[in-house]
Image 1 (spheres, rainbow, N blue to C red):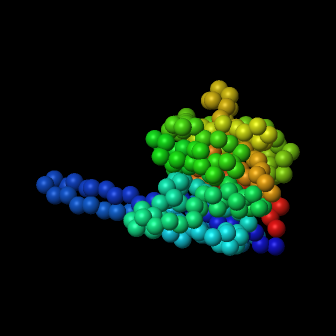
Image 2 (image 1 turned 45 degrees about the horizontal axis):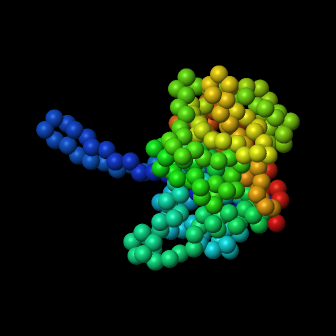
Image 3 (image 1 turned 30 degrees about the vertical axis):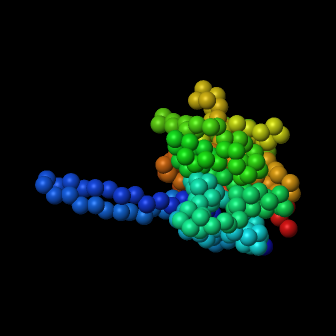
Length: 255
C-alpha cells in the first residue's frame, strides 16, 4: 500500500556579489534542502511529491480536494506568508481561500501533518516564519514563541530518546548522531515527547507527537538535512528508518 506524502518548502534562492579588484559581478543560486529525505524514501512505499517554496505560493491546493490526494503533508522551512499572500492577494487584492484554515480542516478530517524545523519553521529567524496564532499552530502538538525561536548549538547535541518503545522509535537503538540546532517550542498538554535535547543544553523538545480531530500531527524541531542536521545524521542508517516510521505513524488513521 502506497502512502502519498507532500513535502512543501525546503528550497531557496541566494544572490551574491563578487568583487575582483576594480570589477564586480552578481550571481544567483537555487538551492534544494531535502535531498537526504528524497533519497531515503526512494523505492519505498512512501510516494513523495516535492513542492518547492516558490511553487507552493501558487500551486499548494486552494481546495480540500487537492489536499485529499495526500496522506501526509510536511511543512519544512517555509513561512506562513507563502500561503497567505499568493499573487492574487498580494498583487491584485483579490480574495482566495485561506489555505491555513484549509490545512486545519484537512487534519481534523484525518490528515497527517508534520512541521519540520528550520529558519522559516515555527516562528523562525527574527520571528518571520509567523506560524504562531495561526490555524496550523492550532493542530500542532506544540505552540510557537512570539520571538526568534532558533536555538543554535555549534557544539552539537545528541538527542535523548524518552520513549524508546514507541512505534516511531522502532529499530533506532543506540546513540543518534548530533544535531546543530532546533526551534524552541512549548509542548501542548497531552502531547508525547519522544526525543529531546539534553537537559544541560536546554532540554528542548526534538520530536513531539499529537493529534487533532481524526488526524495525527508531529513536530520535528531540527532540520530535515544540513545545516542543523549533521552530515553524519543524514548518512546514519537510522535516518531513513526514523522518517519512514514517523510518516507511517502519521498516515495510520487516514481514510
